Length: 264
Image (tube, rainbow, N blue to C red):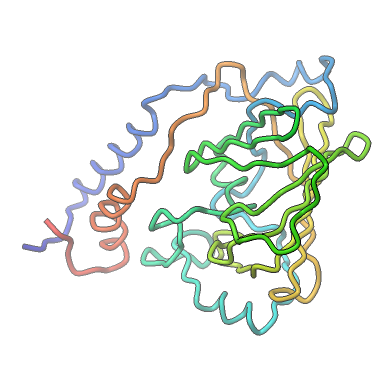
């Protein structure tokens, strides 16, 4: 039997979702105090948990005005039906809505969820709260592979250029979106990230995306800022569970999109 959800039932589901996210309480202030920004720090140490600061969350884009797309990219972009952001519709086809990996750099900015950097002698690891996943950046001097097998988060190597940590990446799986608007990329995409710790509390990042299959010129980002987390902040296990996502689709997203009923 199929029936519509009542407003009360939808409200209950939303409250239950909020309760689930709140099961691991966090401090009221998620960032270290601004007064600590003048503390000593090592500019070559990016370790810690970091929050996106003044990032547009679900509506993130590398810039307000992306470069012109090629005909290939226009076709892919037109086929994308976002469930969030300025083009969003409840019945979208965003890959994340079936728990496909978000890809990079999109996951770095997702809805201001934190990420953690761990530095090891031969690699740097970025752990992401959202989707509970990680990315490895090799720092042992190896070159980028010429033709790597595509990966959801690419293949990355990094090195220091003065006080700037420069990451070069390739080998991205083209099934991921760059942002919530559905901007595509191809497997030819190359990404450069430049991280600079400007004080005890702050990391700045500028990215350059080069993908001649999808864009007519490189896509240079604005300057993004990340703030060091309060020491009491812990990374959570925010796993995307297909069965939970399917329930959300049936009980909330499809009714909001005008579906005639939901499965009982």
